[in-house]
Length: 397
Image (tube, rainbow, N blue to C red; front, side, top):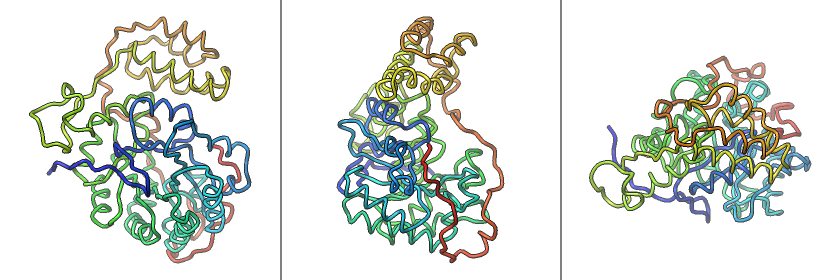
């Protein structure tokens, strides 16, 4: 049964996140340009691409470039991946002492085989003592100056769930919040997210719990908060090619006094999540956002490299629109802003947004598969030996 849920700003240390919406770090996506594009649409916490603690400590040039934030980007949020408590402690201390960020999220949710087969990512919480040591090291090094949060999955697979134990350990270590992608590593990005697991974690912990998984529209975020009681939402694939989702989320969480025309039903109690219908952009409005995205990328990377990076976003922006294959191909091969302007000018700006794609998955949809693990990894949950060579010295996106 769904219940109304009062909107409360998310507090992470001294930072207040309102609306309680977090952009998930996505490799090759959530760079400084994309984060700025999303921030221009609505508020929240916008996390940079994941970096590795070893690469940061060794001052890898590519990693240091990834830890770049725009003027006025506050809080500055980065996601850190690490498997060695000592290295993680060094990295967090470096962030604090050199004022590199205002918030650190710890990655324990990556399901990629090259990570899990070494014992990292979503595999690591199975080794509960090692997990607790890593998180405690991060919190200790932060010294209260930078809030530490943890993002994780339900577990390795349905027979090896870890999220409740990991959540309790993270809470004991002193983290500010825990985010749960309600899938196992074996699911990867397939099937449906288990929102009941988010509700279970919320009922178990005293610290804020954020929900992640299957939020494609603002209405999904409202429904997740209502059904699970979670304190906020984490947006990943749902914003690919749709940065305006953050505008919808801001309006949906703001209550009935904001954009009254967009809400359905009768006036509701102040601060209670309303039902929400988004404003859907025309193809012309989407083209304007595409141009802005490309411009921001070129300001950061230079025109040639920026336009090249923009190419991967084209299919996401145009999903469902009646745009012919030749024009799509040309846009996906664009190499300059003038060329992009010419191609965008060939789109019919009056074409309405294709409602049939609302609520559909975006981005990766990899099928479920057995999780690659180090030999003997499942034999003991209390083995806290640091996995060998599980962390590369290059963040690499």
